[in-house]
Each structure stands twice: as structure tokens, then as C-alpha cells.
Image (cartoon, rainbow, N blue to C red):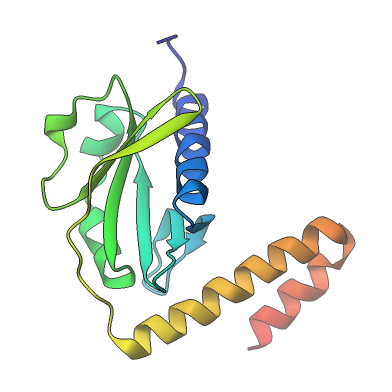
Length: 156
């Protein structure tokens, strides 16, 4: 693989992983702020109504400096790491799923063990997910409206 810097490598892994999500019938959203203050690299709504949180790791240093990953479990039904083919996979915890990206393609090499969300939390997360998706779509059609949207979201 060509040696790429952190931002470019992360972007390639995220793009390939999002394509995988779409092939699986999952709806991926990037950079989703969670109620606990963390930001999921990808939060995907699965066909079954569950949520998969996917953390993109560009390399070993990125993984080793991230001690917050267990906290993502509280806001997903399944937790995955997405890495590229050069990542030393044995570093990743076995209690998480594993997605490996090669170029613009990615595959699930290990399914994430399920840890179902409580119904009330799932409902709240689903509302947040739907709102974020709708706002992002609206901003593509009318970028100037974003100031109004941000004000309305703060008021809620």
C-alpha cells in the first residue's frame, strides 16, 4: 500500500467502510456526536433497527492513544473497528467486530458481539440520528439555511 498520512488514510478507510455499510443495507452517518460527549466516526443504522458504531483507526498509534473506545458501547448494539490491510489486527480487542478496508472496498472479518441497547436509549438515538441525517441533507440543498438550523437545534 502507498504510504499515506493520517488524514488521508482515515478518509480512505471511512469511505470503504461506508460503502460496505451501504452494501449491507446499513445507513452510515459520519462524525456523529453522542450524548456522552464522544463522537462516533461512523454510526450506522442497520436493517434490524440496531446501531453499529464503527471506529476508524488509521494505524497502531491512533488505536493506542484512544482509551475511550469502550464508552461507545453505551450508544450502539455492536462496536466495530475499521482498519486498513496494513494494521496489525491482533492489537484490536476480540470483543469488538473487525472491518478491513483495501482500497475502496471493505469486508467484515469478525462480527461484533451484540450488546443490545435499552429501548428508551434506542428511541432517543434513532431520533437524533434521523434529525442529523435530515439536517445534513437539507444543508446540501440550501447551505445558507444552516445558521437557522443550528439556532433551532440549540433551542431544543
